[in-house]
Structure formats: C-alpha cells, structure tokens
Length: 240
Image (cartoon, rainbow, N blue to C red; front, side):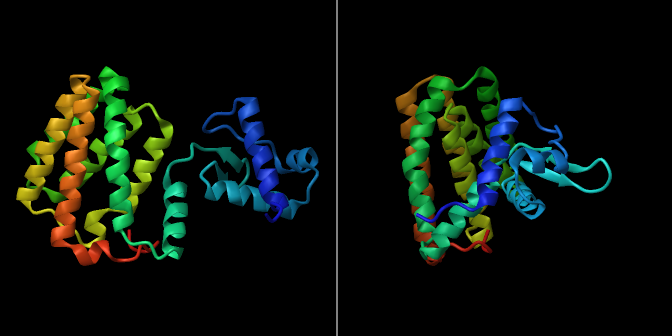
C-alpha cells in the first residue's frame, strides 16, 4: 500500500479535532494561522487538506473577511460519486445496482418494521397517500417513490443502509437512463408501496421483507422485459 499523502492525514486530524471539540454544523474552524501551528505543516498542504474536506462535504470554505472553513453535515453524494466511479471503471452495467437493491431492501424493510418510530411510519404513510393522489404527475410520483425508499432505509436504524440506498437510488434513477413509468405502472408501484406500508405499520418483519422483495422483483422484471438494453448500459458518472 502506498503511504497516504500528508494532506489526507492532516484532513483526518482535522475531522478528529472537530469531533473532539464537539463542533456542530455552522461552527467555524480555527483560523489558518492557528491550524498551521497546530498541525506543523505548510500553507499549501493545509489548503489541500481543506479542499479535500470540502469535496467530502465536511466543511464549506466561506470567502471574504470573517470567512474560512465552516463545519457542514456530509450527505450521501460523496458515497454515490465514489461508487459510481468504481463501477464505471469496472464497466459494470446498471443491472448491478438493480440486483443490489433486490438483496438489500427486503432486509431493510424487515428491520424497519421493528425499529421505525411512529413519526417515521406517519411519514411513510404520507408518501404512499401523496403518491396515490398524484399518479398522473410523473415528477411527483418519482419524488414520492424515492422518498418512500429513503424513509425505510433510514428507518431501518442502520445508518449504513440509509446512505447506501440513497446512493443506489441516485445512481439508478430510471427516468434519467430512459426507463419510464406509464400511469398503469405507477399504479402498480403505489399498490406495492401500500402493501409494504401496511406490513411495516403492523410491525410484521417477515411480511415487510416479503412485500419489499416482491416489489423490487416486480420492478426488476418490468425493467428487464421493457428496457433490457438500458440495464446492460455501463454505469457512467455522467448518466445520472
């Protein structure tokens, strides 16, 4: 293994210090002069470290007087980009992501049935009801579809699942690669979401996993039957 660059090692120390100090979103980090002294590095290395953390969503670099590095909350976009690039250089097709969801999402639904809060279940019901009321609006349908799966992923109580599904959904945005959802298909998705919701609200882990498995399998079958050439397309950073 190649030794890590000094800038990355310093970035790791900066993150450790953010946690040690208990910094929260919006807090300013120490001024450049203090950080140069603290980490015993040159200005160029420090700025490279800060740029790296900015790309990871850990900080924002505010320009002008009174500016500087400000703590942010990282989101799943960095993970999605890293996964996309890894898969692109493996020439992996979009089918890879669909298969991953088939394996992951039933387990998440099972955990969600045991761990979701009442507030999260209410939010899940809203996404189902709102989708049903707007089946004629494909943009609204897609938004509620993503929201439904996000809520379950984060409601599983497993942070890793939350970020993974957020990334996978971002990478396999069917509308972006050409998979469309005619209104009859939207109705089928809504019915599947309603079944999953009922099982989760009943706190039935096995029924929740089975309903989610059937839903993802039906999506995969639909995409395979109607758009096989799209599933065979190589994943690309520019295609989502």
